[in-house]
Length: 100
Image 1 (cartoon, helix red, strand yellow):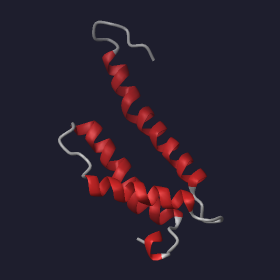
Image 2: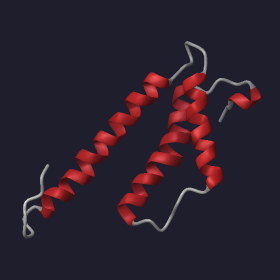
Image 3: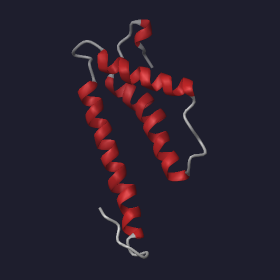
Image 4: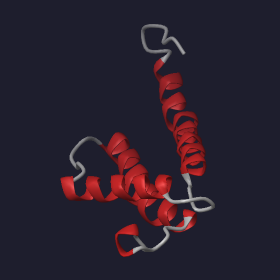
């Protein structure tokens, strides 16, 4: 993946698919689904954070802040709709009402 430390532009699809989504969001979802046995290593967290920061501070037309914000929101919404909401609905019949 290109990085700005070398003066390269980070393209939206490359940064999102290969770094942010794959190494951060997917890993976080796996952690939420399977338990907190794994955690982000500091170097890994810094790398992901730096990629996101760089993508949001590149000069136009390569400033991806709006796109990343939208994709991040859509990804969270999908996780809530596909994973959290069904789990809450399954629990609602177990001795109480869950407020949604």
